[in-house]
Amino acid sequence: MNWKITFQAAATYIGAIMGAGFASGQEIQQFFVNFGRWGFLGIILSAALFSVLGWIMLDLQSKWRVNSYSDFFKKLIGEKWGSRVDFFISILLLVGLIAMLSGSGALFNQYVGLSSWIGVLLTIGVIILALWFKGEGVLWINTVLIPLKFIFCLGIAVLAIFYGLQGDGEGVVSTTTNPLIKNWMISSILYVSFNLTFALVVFASLGKEIQKPGANRGAVFGGMLLGLFAGVIGGALISFPEVKTFEIPMVAVAGKLGEWPAFFYVLVLWFAMITAAVGNAFSLVTRIVNKNKVNDHVVTLLLLLLVFPLAGVKFSVIVKVLYPLLAYMGLILLPIIFSKWIKQKN
Picture 1 (tube, one colour):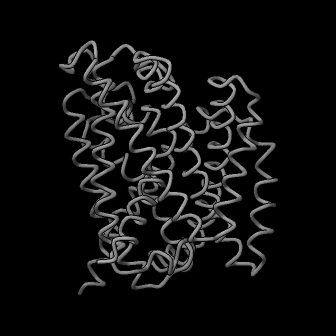
Picture 2 (cartoon, one colour; picture 1 turned 90 degrees about the vertical axis):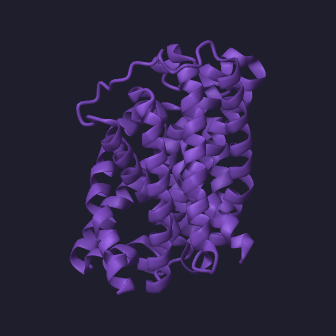
């Protein structure tokens, strides 16, 4: 087995999904913790779906030899509809990139006391560095940052569970106020559907860099680790039910453990924003380069110059609009992905 590509695939999968919403605890609170103990069954279900669908995505991409998410969708649903979905996802990726830059600026301003534009510029600098080395750079930025995110996130969440004021899980309201999410099972499927789109476009954009023996296993491991992440964060949030009203609940949890845990968790959030931003930017640049046959370095610089002044858009507003759209679009794609894979096998 090629353990290098297995590890890189797992790290890239986690990096595409474990963005600011995941590491902040907001996604875990909304989609799982709000259902109390049932939410942990939802986490197990979502981890299983991430593992299975990750394997299927990479298996299809390897057979089709696609080099962009545009190619993947055209193979999946045909030329006509593939082009329409391609345009829609490009817009969503652009909005997601802006959201990550905006969130980075907010972190530096709120928790470090520096101008938000310094945070935006530093994040852009990391994105340029990663994309300068193309697909290999994306794989390595995830290979370096994902383990750091894992250590900080898991460590602080475990400490929070250990020292939590309540550990029985009864302090959290077991119903959700979102009328679009009626129960824990629907919630977990919706969670997978919108997150899977981001992972799909990143894997497809990596092309031959990820189409190697061992990558499928990496997707399975990545799905399992995402379940572990979500479970530990969920346990930490249940231990401190009073933080569920915070916009970034896990920073509030870390703050209860002391100033240093809070600082390191802010660092985790920034890493999460970087990996998500790198994935979005790389997918967009790859799409533009493949379609127009232009220099990728020039496209990277122009894209980041375009989004820089838009980084002041409020992160929470973008997330409220973006996530439902991705979730319901993903619900349409999930059965299509399964059926295509079964047909390929037959």
